[in-house]
Image (tube, rainbow over all chains, first blue to last red; front, side, top):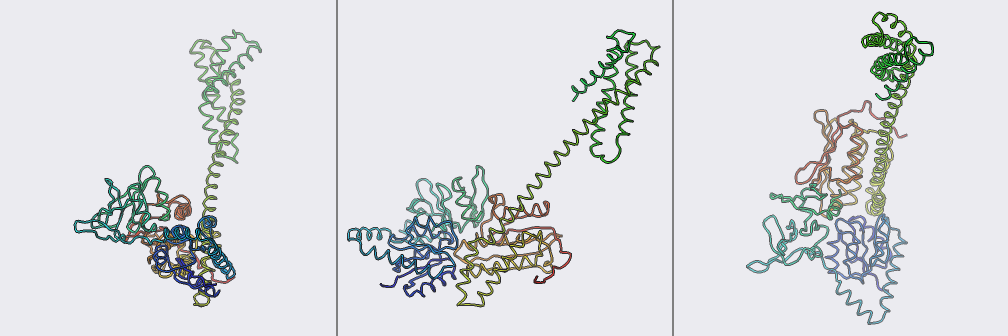
Length: 255
Length: 355
């Protein structure tokens, strides 16, 4: 059987080193790439072909579970984690196996057996199902998180670096991307932006606001169990966090 | 209170009147009853004013012989009451003025006996009641205080075991050590030592109220060493300690809790490299242990109950009775979480034996 092409994702460099070494020692795998977070992984997986992804669950921003949802369905996923209550959630995604750190050699072999068995089954099924799978895989090809957004000006269409956007705000049926130097109307709604942008950076804090967490300077309590987010920079604008989004923001900031 | 007093006085008056009639009084029962009621209410009223005060003092004067004092007080009440009542009786015309000395003589003997009997009974009752009340409230206060202390101790123990021996931290560290063994055995060995030091310190922390700042900083360095091995370039640290502070007494794992909070929620939560700065200094008799990170500022009120910083704040409050504080300040585009304590230096250096 051909060697499996494996892609490894973990935010700890030493964990990547060890996993690559364990996989190499089996002689059954080629490691085709590594990434330290979900954004890097999505960008890289658009370029390289892989059969299996070894995915750490706890990573900054977007977790391994969230990343798995964005990966093509024909890509086998093996989760790795130190200790977790997420085992069940992991198997609800397209996970093939689940490895506990420190990872044991014989468990790696078992996980590879499972991946190979799955691939063998997939190659035996009839062509209609195969075409169906292929179509599904194509539709769900991994899209990296957007780094630039187009916006219209009188001169034509320009690109905006999302790292410079402090927040997006929906006003008068338009979506404004606000930067420290001004604001630009973009053609996407907040829900579309939320899906396109890295959830590790952009968090919906209100029906009408999506904030870039890198630009948040401070959090203030606000009447009615809400919070106020104050942005960095000279303007120090305040954005309201609606009650139902307070928990998500506190979780993200570790409060 | 007053209804009870009037009832007791009336009862005493009626008893005396009946007693006089059965002994063979010369006057009508109504007249006798009126006289004795005036006596009983005057004396009883005085007793009602004085005895609760005496009872309250007696609650706290245990051990001495209070009964002599009580008898004297009761006798004085009887005497003053008799004179007052006799004057009233003569004044309203129940007894002619000429019979005053006789009335005084008879009433003094009877009143003394009754006052001693009733007064003693009432006093004993009042003292018992006051003691019971005092004991109950004392017990309740003690119980509340004990519950609070137990809860905090339990919380601190839980927090320290859970966060330092957090399985996630422990297993990830073991994984990092496994990765280092073939590549950098010396660093792997160092990591094992740092992890062992951290575990030992955490297990001992429950037994001690304070440790020296030097010991606490050693454990913070060990912890940061482990996290740097795990996070690689993402975590940079700077530790700056003013001279002469190593002997200061600090609560175990307090600074560690703040540092860990920064690592967990700022350094480990970002893909880009971040710095954590630890600073220890003393000004005007107060020790300040400050940890800076690039995270967003927040008021302490926004911290969820049971969060590491929330538990730490409660711990400092109990340990230093309001003199130990946790503060969050804005600085250099990030925030500083600082522990502020009165400076206390250990009396003798801790022996460094290995037993």
